[in-house]
Amino acid sequence: MTKLSVNINKFATLRNARGKNNPDLIQVVKDCERFGAQGITVHPRPDERHIRYDDVLAIKEIVTTEFNIEGNPKDRYMQLVLATQPTQATLVPDAEDAITSNAGWDTLSHQDYLKEIIQELKNNGIRTSIFVDPEEKFIEGAAKLGTDRIELYTEAYAEQYSLNKEKAIESYRKCAILANELGLELNAGHDLSLENLNYFYKNIPNLKEVSIGHALICDALYLGIENTIQMYRRQLQ
Ligand SMILES: CC(=O)[C@@H](O)[C@H](O)COP(=O)(O)O
Ligand SMILES: NCC(=O)COP(=O)(O)O
Image 1 (cartoon, rainbow, N blue to C red):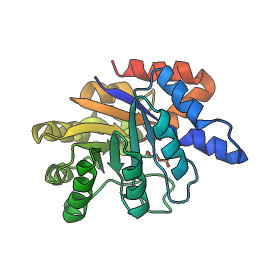
Image 2 (image 1 turned 45 degrees about the vertical axis):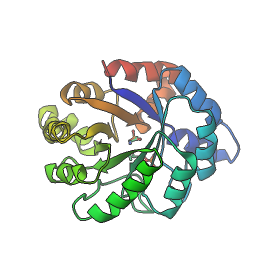
Image 3 (image 1 turned 30 degrees about the horizontal axis):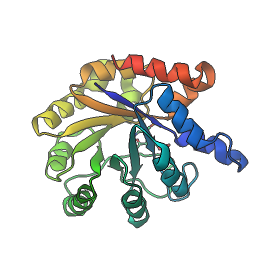
Image 4 (image 1 turned 30 degrees about the vertical axis):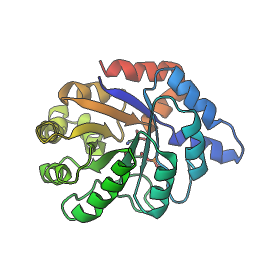
């Protein structure tokens, strides 16, 4: 089964626009889970422009599915993750001023750094995932880090899907097969949508989880959040 983890960052963007508490993220988490989300993802950024660090601690108190915290494992992220004890920490090498995540790890040149962080997270019982571009050398590098999972960064797939979906999936499928052979579990995310999700799911073996936010929230504006979550779940069948 491939689990759908709903990234709720964009609900927080909307809340922050008025500086009050509408929508209430605690209610959002409860409702997303009730409507079929099998996980909740957040990606707090240093400027707290959407999810805030104190949101993360509050969500942990009520989340009943898998809780996934994404971010660059600098001191503040590590303190937050260790205090929160989520199901999974997804490490993303994004710059402080990045509009959104825009690259995966070079798992070869950051071996020692990542190994140490992964070990610390695993010593605390937290599952780890490493955000990577679909390049075989980075999958091989990830397999030496001791991480439980990798998350394939799907922006390039999403971008190319409408032009040539067979070509768009090629490198992802190769990397997924390699990850399976090397004993790495597999997640995927970024710009997955109702348009491109099912083809990805059908072509990627043993996909454990997709985390989806931006497109899902945009769809929900038209289709409603309950219906939208159900529609995304159906793409994973
Ligand atoms: C790690 C990743 O793929 C990103 O998609 C991220 O979770 C989204 O972050 P923003 O919501 O800040 O764009
Ligand atoms: N890890 C990807 C994620 O959480 C959501 O990415 P997006 O759907 O907002 O692009």
